Length: 91
Image (cartoon, rainbow, N blue to C red; front, side):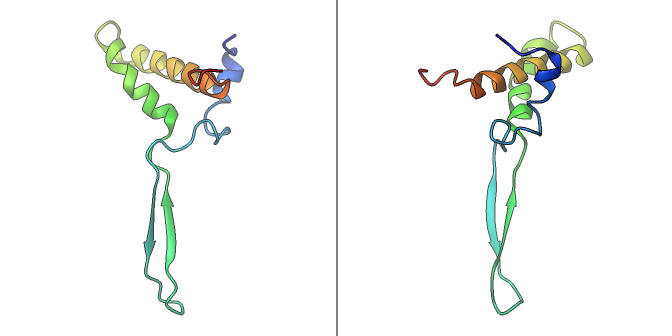
């Protein structure tokens, strides 16, 4: 069963293994301290943002933008919940 609104909102930033970066990048920068390189990681947008962006176009033609945004994040939360529960991987 899909979680209630309070559980739903907890899927955001607090559950990093579910809502990880959608397009993470990692790069090395030559260092000035003993010639050692420093690694930087940028997470990019979250999966929640990516999922919401991928469905907002379906809502934006049928409702006002604010409602479309809210509904898009509800769908994104459902997708994250399904991912957490093992949906889509044959389980």
